[in-house]
Amino acid sequence: MGTVLSLRGLSSAFSLVLLCALALHAQSRDQLAPTLSSAHRAFSVFAPRGHSALLNATGPHAIDSIPTFSGEFHANGIGPNGTAQHKWFYEIAGSRPQNGGSAVFDAPIVPVSLDLLDSDGSLRVVNGHKLHYSLQPFVDAVIRSPIFQNSEYSSSDVPTQFGDAIQRAEFYNVMQSDWHTLLRPSVKTEHTIAVPRDSYFFALNADGSCCAFVLVDLNVFSKLLFPASAHDTSTPVGASEHSGEITPQAISTFLFPNTYLYLNGNPNHCCVLGFHTYDFEPGDSSNGFREKRYVLNYASWISPGLFGSGFEDVTALSHEIVESLNDPFVGSDGLHGITPWWLSVNGNCQNDLEVGDVIEGLPDATVTIKTGGAIYHPQNAALLQWFEFQSPSTAIGGAYSYPDQSVITSLSMPQRSKCK
Image 1 (cartoon, rainbow, N blue to C red):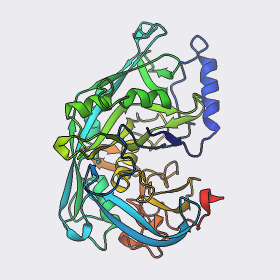
Image 2: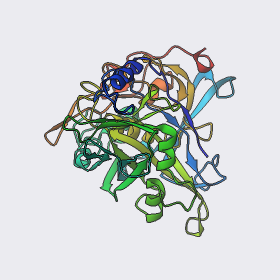
Image 3: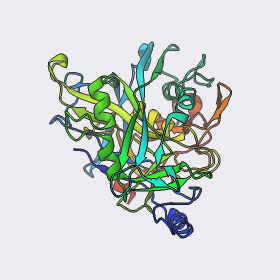
Image 4: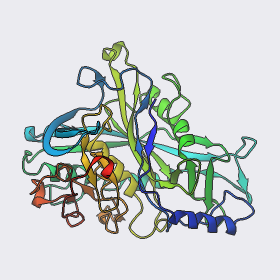
């Protein structure tokens, strides 16, 4: 079973936020002030979870999952085993850009709301308000966002989706003009997870209702989200798999309302805003007994002003969707999606093709896009050429980032293992 690997770059700044909040709300040690403006925002590396013995299986005949294409590049670096390596491999969602055509993925959105429980297991009530936190007010805004709707980008002659625009920027000089990687969204059955007391913190809205945000222990959260066995239908992921509302051929989103995660049982180690991974389950006679890989992400809607200007609405979702396209199997075979060690300006030191992690937390991390009369703030992404240590870059305009090509203008220095 997969485990959480790390939360990169934990900051002590959020400790001050929590301590002040606890002092303000002495009547309840788990009630916080309704702001996260000083919190460190991060995205966790989350290993695959599931229930089959084929975690390291590779190739089209071994697994049942989304269509991908693979490639390789050459660069001097240090491999996962600590030795020098020159050849590297990637596996990207969609069809090969040189062949043209559109790959269209079903993109089910599973709404997940929260019930915050009291010590006796009942729904908690604070000052007459039930601590039920519904995602429903945010669903329509997500569907209307540039993640799923078309906007204009320099990488495409026709309006397209945010993720496709980034993929086209990466392969701009080798793709056929009609090459696209698109998402077909659909909203599925809403689920509610019941979060036990002492595994969450919360902040109320100005009128006392639930909630401005909720912080949940990551280990508890993962157990509530993923199935405990191949036959478990009590969790959102397990239920959605068994009902057929998500399939191995889809890129699925489990969407939460302002729900962020902390590590090590310590709310000062916060905040994870999303992760992408896959759930692997046994195959059956219908698919030749191939391992089923459900590519998915957890992401939270971010209400404006909670983290400060520009880091809001679909910032987290855009980060995870673009990473799902570029590294759908999160380097789980130890080969594809593994890159030379790199060190980004934000301090992240990694050796994987996580295109959002390079830029997360930077002052100009997000880009403003207007779609359907509303303003959204998806996150810029690093391009494949940056991970390839390629100079000059063969991406659109010689860029290393997109849509804002000015966010990253130079390569990381070559790094030793773990940047030491």
